[in-house]
Length: 447
Image (cartoon, rainbow, N blue to C red; front, side):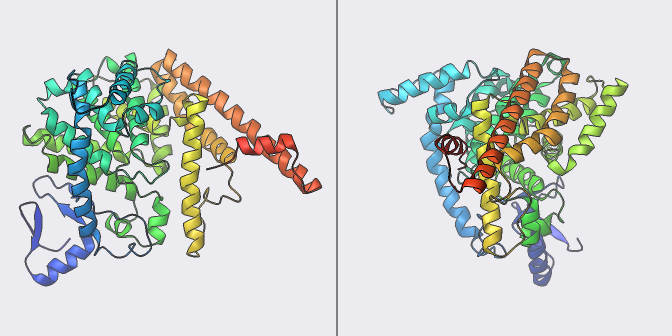
């Protein structure tokens, strides 16, 4: 960028008003931190996807103000969770029903390392506060609060920022998904092949990246942002647009909360860069790149986890696995996630159809069924990655359990797809639906 930029109090100024206006248009709602060279984005800079706002950022300030007020209220509303995790039971602020729910949530946290952990139930027990509660607990379990001398209130404030910057309106890319990915990441960090080499810094990076990897996700994909000329697509030049936004938003929240402000400057710079490397690895367009590299390491048996670079690469792989682990969960959980992600796809397709845009792949509810989408996803994306992950971990009980769930779930989706096809053929011939077919259709009804 040719503009001369000078940072004052976290803002950007330029050597002339014309350059200032020009560069603000180029940067959109972002800010640059000169001392690290890492771009961070202001919280609240991302409007909900609405065609009235796609090319108009004039309302972002108003939206950001409302979100800040909401966070101040949410901090008070959720503060009892941190008290709970420190063993302090509120005396007068909660009803007996709340005590019962918190007791169940505490019991679930004692089993947070098990693969059948029900994140939907946990989210209900914590009153929609699953991400904050889970992260506070895991930071304590892994000794990160003590090791990094973190202030509990500041940590809680940061996690509330992250949780609140997920859009609850999204069926899939919301804070519950982030909590689910974080719980999976915790399980992977405990795998002996990896755990024996991890440093506290590795663990904190893995958990933070999992929690924030989809923060402020708009509920539509990168091609949608590109073809609607959204300012983020221009800002990141159509490359890993969402992942860059998630990373830079996370950096903005870390700086705003001052969670790591007490650490040496070079340490915080390294944490910010490595968070970016982890979050950017979740770009599904880079799947083959990581898979080929992992296969090469495994074939050559040249992974040296004593080496920081190799250890970081396996953290990237672990996060990629955690991000797409839904097909490896119990059927009851996996099916819910499948329905949620497809509902989000269909919403994008309906929006594209409404505004006469080409409907994106997998987003046409009339053609792309949930079983067919899931079978393709499992076959071409999930299975190749998790088979290599199992090869790395050495066929541990967790890896075998995940692969068994994956195979069973894929077989169930195949059965449902077959029933759909049979029902469709029967309807074409008779024009009517039998009682048994109606029951099947009801069972497979999409949200």
